[in-house]
Amino acid sequence: VCLVAHVDEEGDALNKPPRASILSEILILQCLSVVLQEAKKLDLNQYVKWHPGGSLGKSIKELQK
Image (cartoon, rainbow, N blue to C red; front, side, top):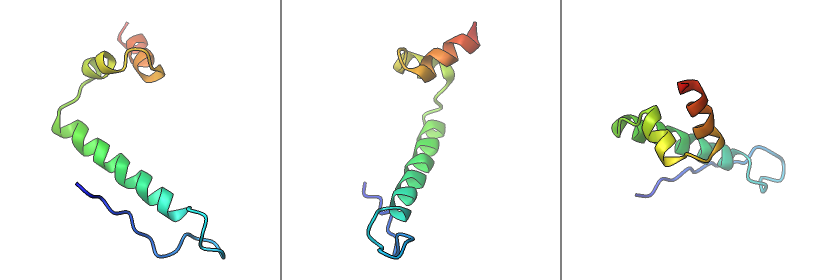
């Protein structure tokens, strides 16, 4: 799979520092993560199982108490 997040201009006079392209990539990856989460029917229990030590996993565990 190849996802292209092409932008014509970065949003400043130099048109070199990656600004718009980074935002474009982040948006595409976030949308992809939502689609995959819904397709796999990921629930909170699975998330905690896969990410038990991370701050998100820990915060979900706290909510489940």
